[in-house]
Image 1 (cartoon, rainbow, N blue to C red):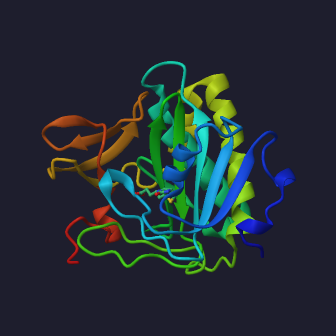
Image 2 (image 1 turned 180 degrees about the horizontal axis):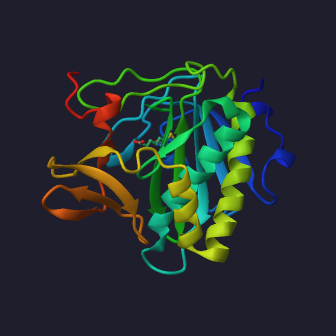
Length: 261
Ligand code: BTN
C-alpha cells in the first residue's frame, strides 16, 4: 500500500511524468497553469486533497484525503469534434484498470463516463481543453464516497466494496490502461472503443432516465450508443431519442433522479 508520493517514474508509461502534490485547488487547473512544462502529452498532476475540485456540469467534486485525484494532459484529436470521444476512452481504461486491481468488483460503465461498482458511482471524469491540449481529470473514491443528496447518483468507494487499495496502488495501473486505450483509439478509431465500452455498459435493454441540461427528462429503454457516443433511448410511442449530454439513472436499481435528498 503506497500513496501517490511513492510512485516510481518506471511505473508510468514511457515519457510520462507525475507531479504529486499535497494540496491544490483542482488538478485540472494546475495542469493548465503548467502550460510550458514538459512533457506536453503525458504530464500527470495528482493531489492528496483538492480544495476546489470540479465535477461535470459545474458541480463541485468533494475531494478529501484518501481518494485519488489527478489530471493527464493529452494532445487533442486531429479531427475537430473527435476529442469528446476521449471521455469514453478514459472510462474504458478506468474500468479495465479497476477490474485488474480488484477483479471481484466487476466494474461497469454508466454513460457517458462513470464507473459503477455494485450500482454505485465510484469515479468521475472531467474533460476540458486548453489550447492544443485535452485535460483529462479523474477522481476515484478509494476510501470514501460523498453522501449524495438532491437527486445525485448514489456513490460508493473501493473500500466500501471490499477492496483495500491505496492511490499509489491504483494510479500506475490506470495510467498504463489509459496509454493503451489512447493508442488503440488513435490507431483504430472510435468503432473499437465503442464496442469495448458497450461490452462493459450497465443497463443495455433496461429502463433508463436521462436528465438533460435543461432539466427535462427522457425515459425509455437504453438501446445503444452511436458512432459519436450519443445515447440512444427508445421512448415508447416516440421512437429512438438521441441524447448528446445529460445525467442518466436506472430507475429499476433504485437510482432515480427523484430520490428525496
Ligand atoms: C464528475 O462530475 O463525475 C467528474 C468529476 C471529475 C473529478 C476530477 S478529480 C481530478 C480532476 N480535478 C478536478 O477538479 N476535477 C477532476
